[in-house]
Length: 64
Image 1 (cartoon, rainbow, N blue to C red):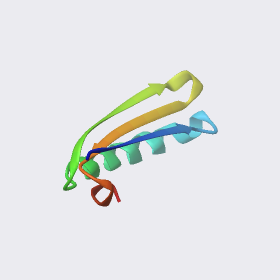
Image 2: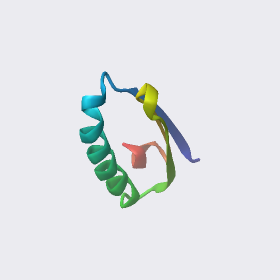
Image 3: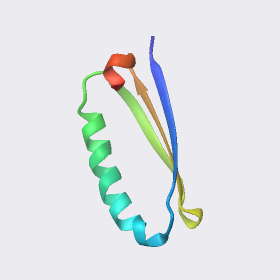
Protein backbone atom coordinates (compact mmCIF):
# COMPACT_ATOMS: atom_id res chain seq x y z
CA UNK A 1 0.00 0.00 0.00
CA UNK A 2 1.46 3.42 -0.95
CA UNK A 3 2.40 5.83 1.81
CA UNK A 4 1.90 9.61 1.53
CA UNK A 5 4.09 12.00 3.51
CA UNK A 6 3.11 15.66 3.89
CA UNK A 7 5.39 18.24 5.49
CA UNK A 8 5.25 21.96 6.20
CA UNK A 9 8.15 24.28 6.96
CA UNK A 10 8.08 27.94 7.91
CA UNK A 11 11.41 29.73 7.67
CA UNK A 12 12.31 32.21 10.38
CA UNK A 13 13.51 34.86 7.94
CA UNK A 14 14.28 35.68 4.33
CA UNK A 15 18.00 35.25 5.01
CA UNK A 16 17.42 31.48 5.22
CA UNK A 17 15.70 31.29 1.81
CA UNK A 18 18.79 30.81 -0.44
CA UNK A 19 20.18 27.95 1.65
CA UNK A 20 16.74 26.36 1.92
CA UNK A 21 16.26 26.57 -1.86
CA UNK A 22 19.66 24.97 -2.48
CA UNK A 23 19.13 22.18 0.05
CA UNK A 24 15.56 21.44 -1.06
CA UNK A 25 16.78 21.02 -4.64
CA UNK A 26 19.38 18.53 -3.46
CA UNK A 27 16.75 16.68 -1.41
CA UNK A 28 14.37 16.48 -4.37
CA UNK A 29 17.10 15.01 -6.57
CA UNK A 30 17.94 12.45 -3.90
CA UNK A 31 14.27 11.46 -3.42
CA UNK A 32 13.69 11.06 -7.17
CA UNK A 33 16.57 8.61 -7.38
CA UNK A 34 15.49 6.57 -4.36
CA UNK A 35 13.97 3.12 -4.79
CA UNK A 36 10.28 3.14 -3.88
CA UNK A 37 9.71 6.84 -4.68
CA UNK A 38 6.48 7.19 -6.68
CA UNK A 39 6.14 10.98 -6.93
CA UNK A 40 6.18 14.28 -5.14
CA UNK A 41 5.37 17.97 -5.27
CA UNK A 42 6.32 21.24 -3.58
CA UNK A 43 3.95 24.10 -2.81
CA UNK A 44 5.04 27.46 -1.49
CA UNK A 45 3.84 30.75 -0.11
CA UNK A 46 7.21 32.54 -0.38
CA UNK A 47 6.00 35.87 0.99
CA UNK A 48 5.02 34.11 4.21
CA UNK A 49 8.12 31.89 4.02
CA UNK A 50 5.95 28.75 4.20
CA UNK A 51 6.60 25.61 2.15
CA UNK A 52 4.79 22.28 1.86
CA UNK A 53 5.91 19.00 0.34
CA UNK A 54 4.00 15.88 -0.51
CA UNK A 55 5.75 12.65 -1.44
CA UNK A 56 4.35 9.23 -2.27
CA UNK A 57 6.30 6.06 -1.50
CA UNK A 58 5.71 2.37 -2.19
CA UNK A 59 5.81 1.60 1.56
CA UNK A 60 7.13 2.90 4.87
CA UNK A 61 10.48 1.13 4.48
CA UNK A 62 11.10 2.92 1.17
CA UNK A 63 10.27 6.29 2.74
CA UNK A 64 12.71 5.76 5.60
